[in-house]
Amino acid sequence: MTKRALLVVYSDLSRDSRVQRHLLFLKEVGYHVDVWDHSLLFQRYNRSFRDKALFYFYLLFQPLKAYEMIFRTNSLPEEKEYDLVIANDWNALPLAFRAPLSKQGVVIYDSHEFALHQNRESFKWKLTFPRIIRAVEKKYISRADHVITVNEDIAGILKEIYGIPRCGVVRNIPFQRKTGPGAGRRGAGEEVRLYHHGGYIPRRRLEVILEAVLKVNRPLSCYLRIDPAGAALLGKRFKEGNRFHYLDMVSPERLFSLEESYDLGVAAIAPVNLNHVYSLSNKFFEYLFMGLPVLVTQENRTMARYVEEYGIGFVAESFTAQSLIKLLSRLSLAEIEQKRSGVISFLKNLDERSDYKRLMSEIRKREA
Image 1 (cartoon, rainbow, N blue to C red):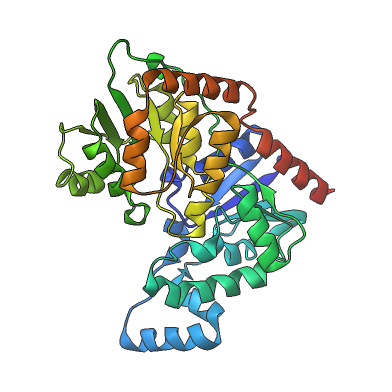
Image 2: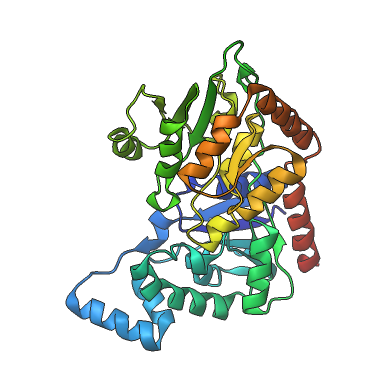
């Protein structure tokens, strides 16, 4: 009999590469997979004065009820029992325990990153969400059969805070690799081509990197594959054609068939919270799988450790324009090609599905 799996997802599945990999891998190993996503499950509460007053009362005294006010659910679909349920992110965790489970059913909590620090730099967010997140995770995380996250650093933090004995790691490694000719150098010339893709999120402070690109005294250009709203906003300050080129976004699976050639993937993000300090993002691995060395900073500790251990890119001293200018000014194409060789060597020794194979081993143990 075919086993059934359920993904409970608050994010937009079409843009969430991690959840797409969950879906693909579970299908590969023989599961029938259903998805409860945000469009099916969640509806915002009415923001009347009464609701706001009630919300803050619950926030202080019953934070789980405050969660229910923010993430009100529609009627859940009636489905057959599931053998495996994966809750993606903290806001999907309570719903995973409302799904019908088979007798040997397994519930996995994928925290992705460290929920308590998602928007730690926002004062408004700090007043509200940490209290709700801690209540949700405290109640449900120990009830999950297994917990996973994106890297060893965040796994250690979760174990310490919630006293869970183990936390597995499933890194954001793509299942595809570069197939087109664009991974190599474009021929003669000293211009260095930087590349960045992803949705524009202000707290990541991409502007700091672009300011450095603008001020570096050498042939340098930056290619940005970001959402139209982000491109419009950045384009006012960093003009198209003045070292900056704005490209259309593409689906994650199309990234590895692009024929354009670049030299360095920009993975550095502002260390404004612990998730950024310990980031091991989708785009970090996507750049590598496109054949590009990566640019990070020492303040992105986990990525910096990978870069230094495997020789797959460059590490600036800090996330400041001055530090990035210093690094970009001295880079030679020969150094970049040397790091590209490091990328090739790193990828040769990497099994894209190794983390999922370990996860499946854990699932099999619990099913037994």
